[in-house]
Image (cartoon, rainbow, N blue to C red; front, side, top):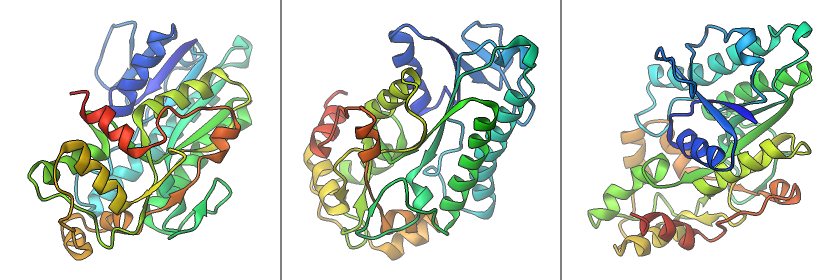
Length: 301
């Protein structure tokens, strides 16, 4: 297939582009810089992609969105997190709407990223795709983000929503923010350490997206998280073991809130998210054990 990857230069997008290209798909990555490369498409949201251009793609994968991990959540930061997702997705669907019906050609699938932040905090409760959205900031962003993508269903385009868990991989994502304290021998669990962490190896992010791309029966929202979530204490212990570092220095919730602001609540509360729907759809996770996943990432350096 000819696939447009929006947000294709980021942590997940780069890994996905490599995987899809390796199995024979033609991947084009959107970029805000002017380019004449056949492997890149110049696009500056909220402008629209020309209908005759987007009509040439068989599939669109939307990963656009500013990182939630990199800075404290100020008012300005929260607006950038929101607008980078909603405005881009809205403009993308508007471009799909502009395709002339005379061409009788359009992408047949839109795979759009989201996050398990959609659900808000749930304590020890098992959370599946049928759970309602939460009421916090991140939940509101995810709910509206997904709503923009799902409008493509009205155009006869299959839509898949991928609600990512905590993505683990080399060189980016949440894990890159966690390594510093552990390498400095002051790593440990967060708050009580009892909160659930629904994690996923980046190979399973790219693997599920590829599976959704190639299987027409996959549609709607999917939790993309490893089948076995762990409590924060267990995750911290596994990370310390993988790095051969101690993991007994707890990080008080108050200290996190002073440093990260509102985002600290996401780390302190946690979610126990299930991936049963992805498994029933036929996807097989490569990594189901957090110890194996962390060792595979950290020993691959």
